[in-house]
Image (tube, rainbow, N blue to C red; front, side, top):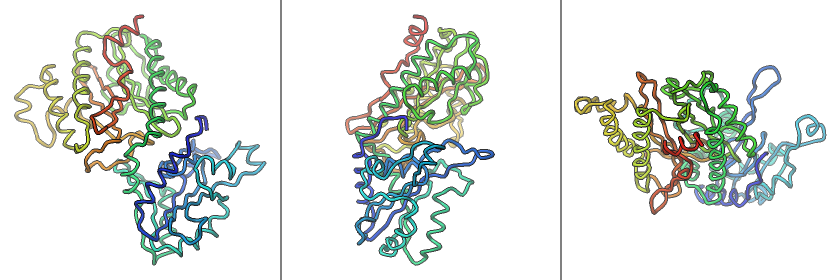
Length: 429
């Protein structure tokens, strides 16, 4: 791993929080993600299962975590199984965790090679009444492949049909959505890297630069700061491309007079940042570009003030829509008649602002959380309104990360330049 070792207290406390939610006489089993094949003998870059990482800190393939607080076999109350390393593996693929290193990373005292899993898990399951298994239940997910958690859940249910099976995902969605202080420290480190990236771009962007060159600058700054890489594929969209919400081709040329929208996040220690900024390619916004930019910034500032405990995410989105309506009327993009005659299922503002304003953030850039339950202190959300005017070739989205507290919200990216005049002054310095 590139990043500094994380304080194992984070994972110890996470497991304590999780165990408190388990029914009596239960066992919970978590598996690392697959190494996904590419072509030939190559595999895609390994990315750890988010729940297993949140509970253990183990960041390598072929790992299994067992949590069974009431197990009569003490060494299986909290057990970790990891890939067995040897001299040949080190020569070909590099260092893997030793048993002692895995103990230090996770805070788990009983760590075994994965070869021992089959023999040890059988008795532990037999002593339990309830088996908690985990699936990817993020409601944004549409998964076609039979991934590791799904395959293992089916195999365990077939072998132990008389046990009571329980879902771990809803518990973890609620637990993971409340960030601890140690987690917030990691997220702030990711944000600090995003800040450095943006400062780099403000000195790099100019007419004639290709979008993919900007993408190269982004990953350069991420990697030189010990990040794992991108938290999602970056959007570098100049001119009319910024009106394509998920534009990722990044193969056009930035032209004099255009804007370039950069939506990018860093993966640091498996925690994601997510920030969007819009840059004038020649260092100067036109009057119309600045007018639209300020409208988006006004909406963002009003929207983030609405993020507080007790708010329902869907009701919040409707409130943001009402704020956006006024800005679009002021920009002469909508009329009062448009709003009066709008389809309530697709409000008029959706023509220019068609996506949601906020999503959960954490280990995943679209992190887990209960979208239909009230917001709570400790949750972190994006705040990312946008206006997309295809006929004018203007697409502007601004995005910061917001922490909800009992005393209101804290903008974790407020210190990163966002006002258009500030951006111009840096680019022209």
